[in-house]
Amino acid sequence: MLLFARVLLVLTLLVLVVLVVAVWRGGTTPRERDIAWLAGSGTVPDDEAEVVRRYLARHRRHRTAGGLVGVVATAVAAFRYQGSVSFSALLFGGIAGVLVGALVAESYRLGPRAGAAVASLEPRDPAPLPGVVWTARGLLLAAALGATAISLQVQDSATLLLVAGGALVTGLAEATRARIVGRRRPVLSFRARELDARIRAFAGRSVANLQLAAALLVITGVVASVPVPGGLPAALRWLVWLAGFVAAWVYTHRAAPRPPYSWRRPT
Image (cartoon, rainbow, N blue to C red; front, side, top):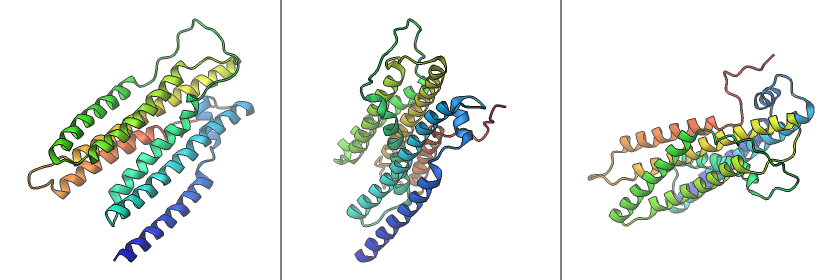
């Protein structure tokens, strides 16, 4: 039985590698429609298009790589400690990996910035989606309180470790958002400033949605772990996981570096 589980794990990893390579080769290259969407123009000059293309490609590579790492790490850990892996666990690891990969793609902003900057009294644009961010903070706080209560009752720190992971992701998101809004203003031409503003606006929305997706995954794990007399029915536990996964996927998708299906290129 153990040999069969190991063979199944190896086959699963091979299939995942093949799928990711296929997606990597065909899914990380931005199309002209994608570039026009982020640039906000029907016709994008070549120099601006190259900036947008590199930015979108970096985002997609990191999201794809993060999803792969999340699924593989979840599969390995599940087989190592439980001898099997469930679809819900793989989904959880995949979504978590995608959102961490996307945050890592934006974390380049956290490094030092060289070059000249311009002093300006013009007020900075506020961070986008403040309601989404405050909701994420509230959910993480509720998850921390719930995980503490569960840990004290059942003498198990698993939920606390889950919350700690969520706190690390939240810290990365908060630092990235702060840098997007408050970073130095480089000396740029008018067109370059407009493009920079659009990229930073998208980055702020993306990070806010990813922060909420991470909080939803954490609170889902905590709620599904609540001890109930007689045990939580399997069907109810599955519904809790499903609701949390769907909500997290929705916000992860909203953070995707792709235009909405309803977007139409300006003429």
